[in-house]
Amino acid sequence: MEKFQSELVKRILILQYKPFGDVLLNTGYLPSLKEKFPNVKIDFLVRKPYDIVLKNNPNLNEIITFENLTGIKYFFQRIGLIKNIRKRKYDLIIDQLKGSGSGIISLFSGAKYRLGFNEHQFNWVYNLRTNEGSPKFTAARKFDLLKPIGIDKLSYKIEITITQDAKNYISNWLNKNDLSNSKIICVAPGSPVKSKKWNSDNYAKFCDKIIEQTDYKIVFVGAPDEQNDIQNVISKMSKGAFVAPKTDFIKAGALLQKADLLICNDGGLNHLSIAVETFSLAIFGNTDPILWSGHELGNHFYLKNNNWNYSKDDSFGISIEQAFAKFEQILALDNFPQK
Picture 1: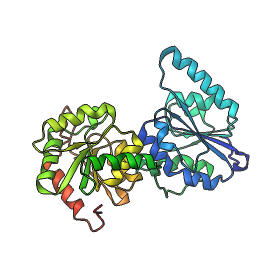
Picture 2: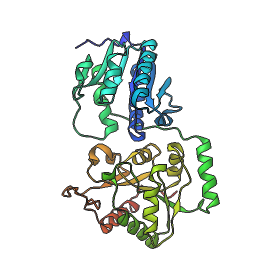
Picture 3: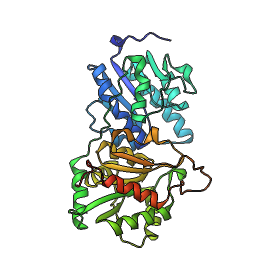
Picture 4: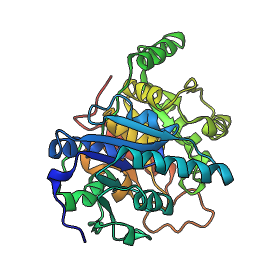
């Protein structure tokens, strides 16, 4: 493999196309990368609309975007994208993905150094390689890839810029619904991945129990394609709840800043709660909370039944009683905020 010489690096490109949560987790190591290469131009290649996560990040110089195309349009777009990358003359490509697409971009990028994991199916593309380390939260795990370029510390802080426009948008909605002075819990029952969705009956009963036994208001939040999941839960509830207005990822962050707690499945909103420092309780199905929950941070919690075997049983082996007991434990913590 190539011997790395940091003094030769003047331009860096990071590859992580999607989704919202995974792109957000990359922000954790950007300060360390900037510290290692203070005078180097650092760019990020990401697919729209996930670029919104990176806007106004102080550690990036430019965000390069592309559309999600298919067929012949994808082919010609990819040729144009590679030409654009070659024209920019990057010295180092950091490929945080493990797919064929990012491998091809890395191979034809023209970069002197191409950094990727040994576990990548096209690992021969990379002249700087390393192994994934021991299981840990993915924001910390992303540092594993940076060891060949001299970065091995695991200190990270996931960052996102919540704009004043987003804050005003949420504040206005809260005012209109007489929620400005209410205690709020956000609930996100949706997911684009079916095996990540806790049973809607359980969500409905869990939310009803929270409303019955506490003075919290429930505000449901989710992406546009998760609204059916939200309405499905609401239709099974006996108590009233609120549905957040149309939000993008930044506005969702502004809403979470107003909440005391997020209850959700494994997904991007759980990572967003880490970035905006709102407590969370994530309910896990067949994914690994060690990798995806951020539990070691002290204010992000999860429920997982390790003896449960997914076979069309979307209860995940987690009862309403177990969920509510965990909820009460979180509320009883000395550091639990009352916003």
